[in-house]
Amino acid sequence: MAWNIHKIVDDLQNVRHEWKVQQNSLKDDGGRELPSRTEIKKILHDLCGILFPMRLGPHDLRQQSENFYIAHTLEKTLYALLEQVKLNLSYDLKYKKQPVDQVEISTQAEQIVHDFAKQLSSIRRILDTDVIAAYQGDPAARSVDEVLLCYPGIVAITYHRIAHEFYKKDLSLLARIIAEISHSKTGIDIHPGAQIGQGCFIDHGTGVVIGETCVIGQNVRIYQAVTLGAKRFEVDDEGRLQKDYARHPTVEDNVVIYAGATILGRITIGEGAIIGGNVWITQSVAPFSAVSQSSLTKTQVT
Image (cartoon, rainbow, N blue to C red):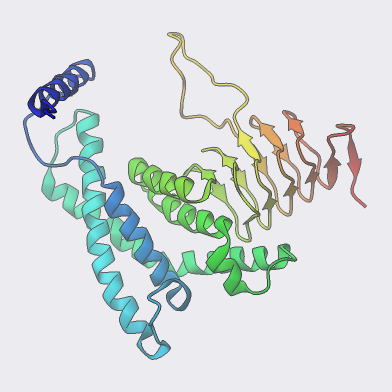
């Protein structure tokens, strides 16, 4: 059978050219200009092994060689990360139609990766609180090792805490790729801009959505299919969506949000509140109150 490969190749080239014309992105031929999702997956795998070497590192690792493994893997991983950061920085400049200085990009990228490496111990410490929260919050958990090895919520929060570091450095594309790798892996969709305090436990997790400008306090428990989203999207005078404004909920410390709850808009769920399953909330909830589906009334927690 003749596949007429050359015709298909030509057709695809024409479609790509049309897209570039529409996006005003015609440019000279060159190498890849975007961070690689494949390479970032490898980096995340290695970072998890660095953070939890005896649990997420190589199966044959021994404690006596733990530091050697971390040092070897860390050096390799940081160099790989450096290349992805450079690609993100270069892309941002080209997207904004600003001049690209490769020397300046290299210097900036090295500083970003250096700063990230210094944060690894802090990331590990806060992840320890997340693991403990999951173990203490789930009667089905038999050990912290089970939580770390098996719980999708821990995978999601681990990737998020890494992604958030790059989001804070304005590497939004790299951060978003990490977040979407996590989303594909766990079914939990956390925007890298969300601010999440220590001791966060996302139980089961499938279908959880946490928006970009969410602020979540300490020791918050969230069950499956919860949405912390925007109520509406503001537009400018020309009808274009505005992007840089707070539009997602604030969840204070020690809140529990049960399965299927939808919480929308820049509202506050007060400290210690309990949000029942399948409720729809667009107004702030007072501290230490409970909202149930049956009545949608707020009662004092005793």
